[in-house]
Amino acid sequence: MFRQRLTMQQAQDIALQRIPGQVIHVDMDLEHGVFVYEIFILTPDNRIYEVEVNGNTGNILKIEEEDFD
Image (cartoon, rainbow, N blue to C red; front, side, top):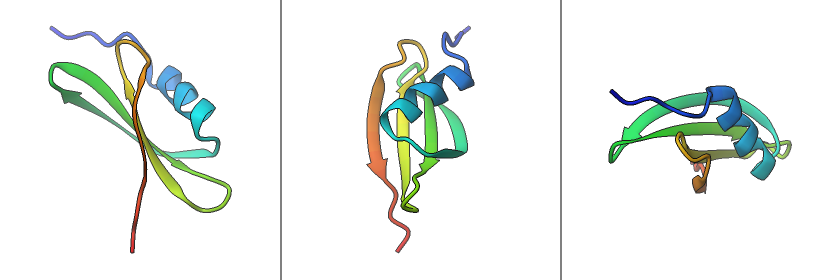
C-alpha cells in the first residue's frame, strides 16, 4: 500500500514558492511507483504553469508552461 507523505496543501505551498499565482487545478498521479502532484497555477500575467511535486520528498520534478494555442 502506498502512502503519500505530503498533503495536497503542502504540495501546493511548495509549487507556489516557485511559481507565484493562483492554484487552479491539482491532480495526483502515480508515476513509476511515486506519488506526484500535478499543480496548475495561473500567474498574474495570465500564464498557466504545471508544477510537478514529488509526493514523498517535496522535490519539484518539472515546471512547464502550458500552451493552449
